[in-house]
Amino acid sequence: MAGGLSLNRVLIAMLQKNVHDHVEWPLRLEAFLQLVEAAGFEVIETVLQTRIRTHGGMVFGRGKVAEIATLVAMEKIDVVAIYNVLTSMQKYNLQQQFGVPVLDRYEVVLRVFEQEARDRVSQLQLDLARLQKSFPYIKVSESERLLKERPARRGGRGPGEYAYHAQLQQVRKRIAKVTKELARHRREHRQRMRKRYELGVPMVCLVGCYNAGKTSLFNALTGAEKEVSDRPFTTLASKWSMTVNPEIFFADTIGFALDLDPELISAFQLNLDDMRASDVVLLVVDATDLLQLLKMKLESSLDILRATGIDEARIIVVLNKVDSVDAEHLEEVTSLVNERFGLPTVKVSAKTEWNLDLLTEQIRGLYSQMGALSPPAP
Image (cartoon, rainbow, N blue to C red; front, side):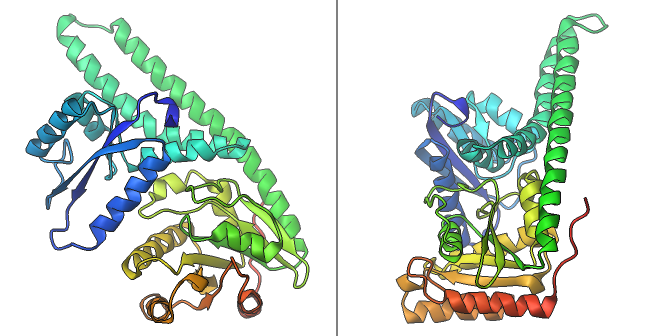
């Protein structure tokens, strides 16, 4: 089971704060459900609450918390997965109420990452993301435990407090150790990127939400044979490959997900370095998605790219899987990207390799127009 859990019956809960939204929340909930299943859980129940304000201590109102607690007991639920990102205190309070582990969206994505982290750098980046998330929770949960113990003592530190501070110090040391090792890998990674810059060849990075066909397109463009899967986040470590005619470096890097937390993606600095170093960024989109879902994925992906410092003038939206959509839907998708986002688009099919020549021309044209980026600092 994901993350070492031996039990996997899960209840999903979501707080929806926009009372006027009747379209987006079901799509967000469905995307979250897919991630929960990808993490190895069996979804038994789904609970939704529409509430304008988040309850500061427990996210959900007290009545809804009681309802969930009853379902947890009745359905023998092992884990409660919350769509919303929780504070450490909210997580602690909910676990006290439910009597089972509680995971928020950030932690569910981490568990999916764990299944795909096969190389050393990916494992280190995952460790850093996990440690950064767990550190404040340890402080809250141990502080609450010590607070309950304190009335029984007459003053001074008890063994619990010494253990608490020792545990925090151990986590701090682990964060420092992982950060130091990642810094070394990052320096080596930047040296390799500088060598690519010296060749004067366009550097192009493929990004986008999982299942958009990003890796299939990478294989079609480069002749590579990377594993293609419908599982999310199968690419945690960027893969580079160079084409000969014309000469272009392509990178397939970490996939995004709807509502992927920027704090989580920020832990994967080597992947972000690849995005920042790219002269052209191909934002790959699944053209078969429902129009509203496609818009939401584009917005989520662009939010991450902006937070990463990517110049939007260097982005080309690639509408993939056009061999599987009708002309009317494709026209709606194209209009949405052009009018709503103002980004250039190229329609392709990675499966049939249709229109890849035009995509290459667009890349070369944008590279000529924008020029090459400066090489990264050593």
